[in-house]
Length: 296
Image (cartoon, rainbow, N blue to C red; front, side, top):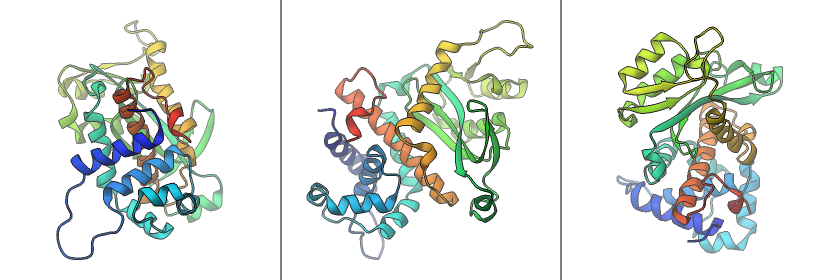
């Protein structure tokens, strides 16, 4: 195997077609673009950094290579509708990629929440279809307020997504992560260590994680006796994962304007990162989260 985009997309298509997509049943015409091809195109779009679906579809129709690889290339409207309806397929593919990697068996998972801005003006806030879902939140790392959602991510040490969700930034971080862990309790292994930020401190949250068999590890707060220190070196892992999503996969430029649209575009970026990590494991690349070979 080679570390290039063509090889990654081919391997991803085979994996999805063989182990993720179920045969379509029932009446009606089968879509000209299969579900496996849809996932492949959605991954390529993010890796090649086409934030606009219109620009991406124009690129597909203008480049003869894509016409050779795919028997049918969709229009922008059809592509958009198929992606919005692919929520279960996106989730299932991300999980399938996670299960295929050795990092799935890591004894330590890391978690954090990062802002997902969805609007920059007051008019957007008043008119957006995200009203009721998005809200104002404070980004401490940039010392600024934003309007949007928060991405909660639990991942392996190499950045491979294990579980994730989007939530209103006004909701408490501990409450959201607790709900995420309970919803995905079947993925939690007894004795697993969960590395979190000091914002996830609290007796009730610690009791919940302990009841699930998780050992919570977090930096000490200023008003606590010394236990773990600041864990700066280890905590840097999740910060670098967030930087990959924002710097290389343009998380903050997702362009979603509806709840389904934001979810789809965030899922695309997590899928692209998962596919890159999975392929780097298969090819023996040392830096598992390096995506440079796939962005051109």
